[in-house]
Length: 485
Image (cartoon, rainbow, N blue to C red):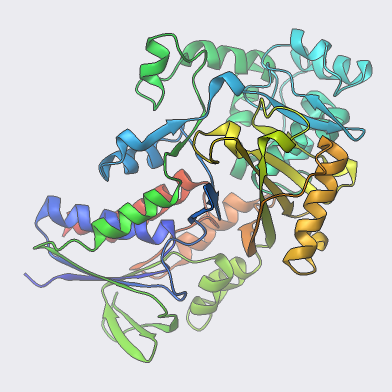
């Protein structure tokens, strides 16, 4: 039986996940496959990357992943990393929001980033009494009558009022996508909020019912600790003891192991320069680094704008739609300190900065409090975020300038004016797609218009988080049809 030849273009987590799924399906079915992965950069893993410097564990990209989306946890376990999964420290499950230049704690009832209980909101400094009363109107407001997508900002204003958008839920939710909530698609980012409103009317009541029905998720990374009473609440995020880079490192190592039915080649510094349908129906011709490759199927695990460049010569309409998806740039500044130099204990996960505060930074994670072993004994690690849809202008300048922005805002907001013993800047240019209103419909139209044998994967389409990208790659690989051959 001749092998099924598949080209995967892009070696980030989505492309690696697609390749892993193709290998697993070949082993399960006995159908031989030949997979060639092409990555333009010198390394695999995309934005995921972990560094160890001077006793600090630094993440270039994501530092954790959602556990309610199981794909990352499941992949880690498949790769033998189950005992490396760790929870956030639930005893430090506190987050602050900047309000008038000061840190004000976010009420614990904001477990879903939207309130599920009102009582803790009443004592919060983050909203005025007028804002609190407007928020409570969610309990009596009718459901939305219209159909179709709307912006996240519009949804929040309808249910909770403008102050909630500006000061609390808007910054928290939009921060996940480093986007402006006024243009962010509700259907493409938080569709469960719309479903809760449709079923319950009140979002607050719906969230409370959802929490009661679900309870503590069994089998999660912290299940054993919760069973013994040592963890007060289930964690919603997990990581790996040695950083998220452990996941991609293990995945790459597993893909390079020999298999009698899966012939895999992982090529770096091999940008695909040309992609075209072959003479034979459903087959494809690729040119990468001066070499040609014929494939039965192609998975483009690329940013939307890069996929558009390859599609433009033969699929102009899908290419135009993809090229119109906006991207924003971001940067992080990791700062290591001696604990003795900190003006306050790091007794939470960090803080978020609303755009209304007109600061240069958008958030700060207290990494060494969020997860263990991120800093050596007697030291602390902070990670400051800059850029995004409302702050790209602050990314101008060199790394010293960005570090200066971070340190100046930390001095104002935390009183932290000590000199760090470690400063590392990571930049991500055109890294995060913006899911504008109508995003889901546009992507559905693109996918339905693609020629047979061509599939898309990655953060530009159905979710930007690590589990979303793993799922996207796996679904693209499943669509190739190894198990159907």
